Amino acid sequence: MKYLFFLFFLFSAVTLPAFGASHPEYSGIEDPIEYVLEFDENFFIIPYQVNSDVIAMAIDPKLTSLLIALENTSDSVFTIDLEHELIRAQNNEFAILVNGAEVDYEVVSDGDSSTLSFFVPAFTEEVEIIGTHVIPEFPLGAIMGFIILISIILVISRAKKPIFRL
Image 1 (cartoon, helix red, strand yellow):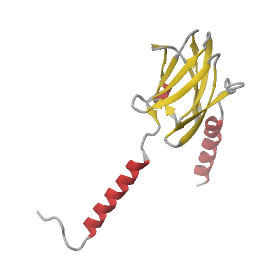
Image 2 (cartoon, helix red, strand yellow; image 1 turned 90 degrees about the vertical axis):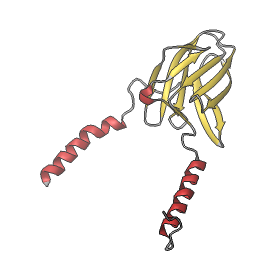
Image 3 (cartoon, one colour; image 1 turned 30 degrees about the vertical axis):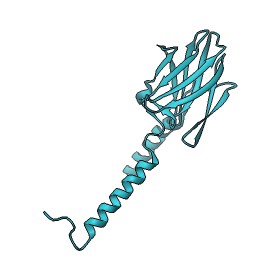
Image 4 (tube, helix red, strand yellow; image 1 turned 90 degrees about the horizontal axis):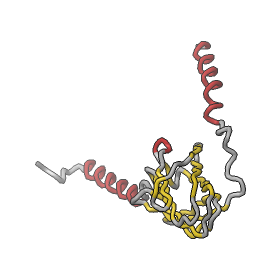
């Protein structure tokens, strides 16, 4: 028993710091500008940094993407921090389109968010960040519908008198 406890303690001491440590090169976005995105009565604060004016941001659930409208853009690096609750991609494999053309990007991810960095040339008007999941992944209405449906089935199946006969 003591041997198993020792192995568990040793395993915990070796692996837990790896889960709690942040990326050593990542220190966040310096002097971020914050955009407050409202979607389905939820508010998301999106910190970003770019040499441009952000006109609007919007979620497109059908395309699983975040759309960003820009103006007065000059050559710069666009850095944006996106919560996983808002948008995420399997294996951090996002697709980023700048004026309709796919661009290379760098991503640093932790447990709560992903920070994306990519180049935007002068006169860029639209950026689209495509993930695999965006909010709402599973709407509350669907959950309530399933709960009601299962409750009805349970009530009918528990009834003493059979309703359906073959």
